[in-house]
Structures are given as structure tokens and as C-alpha cells.
Length: 151
Image 1 (cartoon, rainbow, N blue to C red):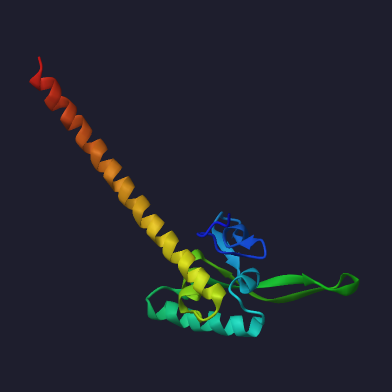
Image 2 (image 1 turned 45 degrees about the horizontal axis):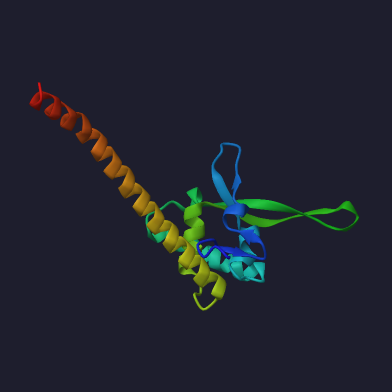
């Protein structure tokens, strides 16, 4: 059975494409993410990224924290290596690209669904943690009242 909450294509999933930099911060290579979001040409995906960078600015988030320019080495024939433009994207950048993408593309629609589900999961997790903390804070008070009631 296919996991309906996992964003994937051709065996590659969004989470499996995640990398970590030298400081342990997670990021995604735009070149790796491109086919997952249904873009066959880099120039079209780069145009979508550039539009998303402007959305990021408009929302008050510094784009340099989410869209880092990078080079990606591509091996060529006879041992040659060509370095092509790439971006290192934060999870927030990936979310913005999906939310601002063309939802007529099935891959973008799937990405939007994925991020909506992940957002709701996080909301529920945060609520459960807050509820647990509230119970733990109330528990010692309840115990004292019970012990004082029954000498």
C-alpha cells in the first residue's frame, strides 16, 4: 500500500532527498527536488524559485536564510566535471515553492497536500505536548490535595 502522506516520485521521497550541512542544518538540493515537483527543465524550475524568493521577501522572511545559492558538480565524459547552478533550500523554501507552484501539475498538487498534512500533524503534536505539560503541572497539585484529604 502506498503511503498517502509521503511526497515521492520514481522511488525518491521528499524526506529521502534531505541532506545536512556541516552544522547539521537540513536542506534540499533544488536540482534533486526539481523532478519531484514535476519540472523537466531547470530554467523553468529556476524561474519558479526566483518567484518564490520574492514571495519570501514579501512575507518578511529573509530569503538568504532559506535559498542559498550553490554549485552542483555533474560528472561528464572522460572524467570531466561541470559545476551547474543549484540552490540549497530550507524546508520552508520547499513549502513556499510547493504552495506557489502551478497546482495543475499533479506533482505540485501532491506536494501541497503533503505540506498541508505535515502542518496539521505538527499542530496536533504541539497541542498534545501542551496538553501533556498542563497535566504534568496540575498533577503535583492534585496529589497534594488528595493526600491532605486523607490523613
